[in-house]
Length: 190
Image (cartoon, rainbow, N blue to C red; front, top):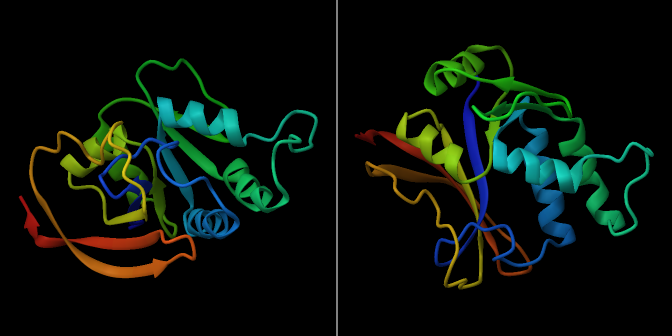
């Protein structure tokens, strides 16, 4: 069974808006590219899919845009070529190497997890909260930014039940950010 990993940037005060933390740098982009490479497919909700596609889809010209720094290209290439599943009840179709997933969320994701492969990766805010509620996330990875945002969407806001986690790994960045990887303790799932 493929494990499902939830990964996101988050500020010290829990904000997970993509513009609230430190701006991406070469080290963090290399890290995220490597983390995505560890997955067979990415799961996105509609909002995250549309945001990522607008920023990281390779233009039809075949050349990356001028605004993109050379050190951003490995991340862009990784996310651009990755297999994606988009979970949405409002979209009528998707492309960008993606399949639209509809129906019962728990059944659909459980089926994806049952397929052969290494891992699945999910990002975003709303979809991961629903997956956490269903007990489907096998690993939580937070890249904690040394920033206090003071506003914005917060990590897993509205989670109905407490999920006990144990630290599995951590990595410190030169910027002061810290990547922390946790696994749910089975006795802590309620």
